Image (cartoon, rainbow, N blue to C red; front, side):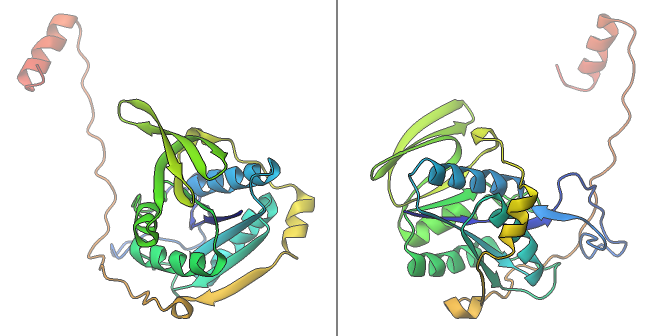
Length: 252
């Protein structure tokens, strides 16, 4: 069974994001970029499936700019077998929309015929949480979202997923699209020897047009602003005073 893992190049989660002075977007100059953390978890899970003998090949896929090669090399260094980069934009500030990504992934799936697609549940830059679900709809496949535990046996997968009320366990038929949550696993660090080996692993470059997809944005960002500064709190001297303040604020 082949496993496809889409990965996205995003601003590293340790970096404080700053908005451009003109409000036209986020400042990416000299900013460290990394693999989306949820996608790292998906790559780790795919590699574990291969190590357990439940997958034969792990293919990392990224849709975006040419610089996403670095992100794919990270996935290869972790243990993915090969990678596919679909160049769908020239400007690093262009964010490829979820439906476009899903259509491109469908084209790749039609060619590769995997039995499983493992995605991060969302990207930390736009928090769309939509690509996996859209891909499932386009393919007509089953889906399991927010997975914190995955067990694959034969032609079905049992997935424990995180929901508002706690945990829900479902069984889905393969092939399927699974989006993963934070508690599924702890991604491994790529060792130096594996980083060197990753440079020799195959990385194919494609374009959105190769899959018959128009990657032109359908949304226009009008303005970008930083969140408002948090208002200062007040100190109270007793429980009674606290209750009075809460009453005044209409909280009780």
